[in-house]
Amino acid sequence: MSAGQMSVPIVFRGPNGAAAGVVLKMLVDCSRYGESFPVSDEVLDSSFCLPIGKAKAAEILERDGIDAEVINLRSIRPPDRSTINASIRKTNRLITVEEGFPQHGVGAEICASVVEESFAYLDAPVERIAGADVPMPYAANLERMAVPQVEDIVRAAKRACYRSEPLAAAA
Image (tube, rainbow, N blue to C red; front, side):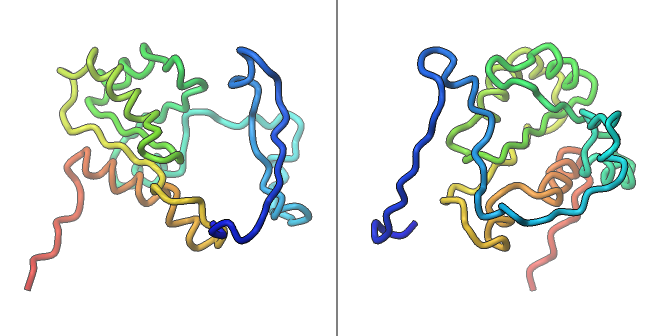
């Protein structure tokens, strides 16, 4: 992003061999060191368990009368085909959300491999929501524009349910 005018030496350490792609869990954003974030008492409780399968977008859609089923895949290769297919057959829709670039296509892989088995059950086009095909911006306002947001998911779900707002007529 600096057009080669600045050198940024970095070392990624990890295992070699077949496990190399499996073990790396995260890269740390060092710019956030020392920054405090609000945490509720509920989260600090040792018995707290993060619910899987519930998302902010699902809560918003529920207010609009749309019962969304959220699947949080624990692995993408191989995808949990049976769970995804069961959901498609139950809801008759598929929306994939991924922060990565669209050309890296985890969502496309899921769509291609899974939809073959459940294509006849779909009542709407498959929606893919992916990050913008740009280098990740440093500025928070630009970063927000580069990764999928709750509003993007809500709009896609409404389109899939044929409940989207009509486009304004051109004057």
